[in-house]
Amino acid sequence: MDVVAAALDRIERADPHLCAFVEVWGEEALRRAGELDTRLDRRGAGPSLPLAGVPIAVKGRGGLQAAGPLLAAGGVAVGATSVPGPGTPWQTWGLGARGRTVNPWRADRTPGGSSAGAAAAVAAGLVPLATGGDGAGSVRIPAAWCGVVGLKTTRGRLPSPDRTGLAVPGVLARSAADAGLWWTVMAEEPEPAEAPRPVTAVWSPDLGFAGPDPEPVALARAEVERLEAAGVVRLVRPRRPVRLADPGPAWLALRTPGADPAGAEHVRAQNDLRLAGILGEAELLLTPTAPTAPHGHEGPGDRYSTSLTWAFNLSGHPALSLPAGFGRDGCPAGLQLVAPHGREALLLAVARRADRS
Image 1 (spheres, rainbow, N blue to C red):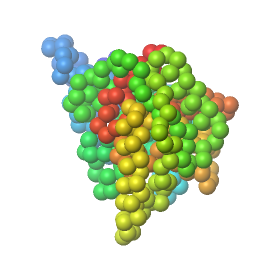
Image 2: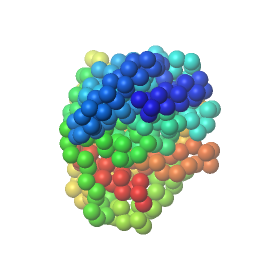
Image 3: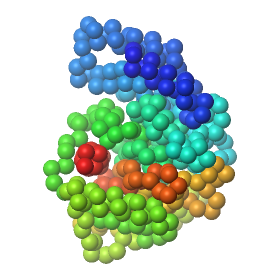
Image 4: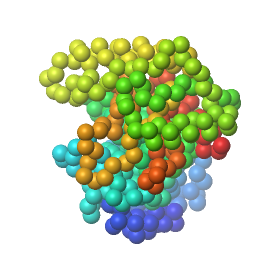
């Protein structure tokens, strides 16, 4: 109970500034924690309760519906995190109970979205992990802009209500180990093993189309070089340059009711073929997570923060954002790792080694 009470205290003190939560379930969380304490006193945690007493936040007011396995594993839901309000352009910030959600590193910048409150809550140390959903980068972008780990799962690996298949569950966590624990519970898989050798990887600053700003590219590339020097990854040169077709029009067509999907499916097939070639030559594809630094609360302007992420919602590949240092504005940046379908364990193993390097 003490851990949950401490989390609720942190939320009470910090959330008037962050606005990361739309609801806080203090009384219910303490009751649940007390029940778990009694159960643990009698029987101990054991493998059936790997999240015993861990405070978690869920994305949005409906987030409890997808959090069943976490609660069954002993997690304690302390509240629902903020998501963008209706009509928010590109869902790049959130609206909490007290107002606009801010980036913990700079209040005049967005935390990213749409898992805005989730990223802010984890980055500020209010909870160790928060659930998210990723339809175009909605876990990975806020993870990058708030300096935490964000995992998007393989399309179809976990249940999702999204009719298009573009949006899938994910998690934001302060460490790769915590993200791995979420995956173990949700996927009912063993804990990801350590990567025993450098993992082969291909680097692309822009996927052949994105036009990112120089600083996010430089920060991501510096993190790649750090991981290479530490023996976590080994860069290989692909036989052909990484050149995907811009997925934006295809993504938008699939999201638009009544639109003809034929063009979108052509782009998807073209990119799937190219990604199969890249990931046939190396185990990972590495890119910056976002093409820009976090923008202000007035909105992103004409730049799509999704330009480096939504290709993998279209293709369905799992992807993970790792922290990649800080820009001149004091805000974090991210390095995106993309793996073959179903290889979340590989992403998490590499991320754990990166955490320890």
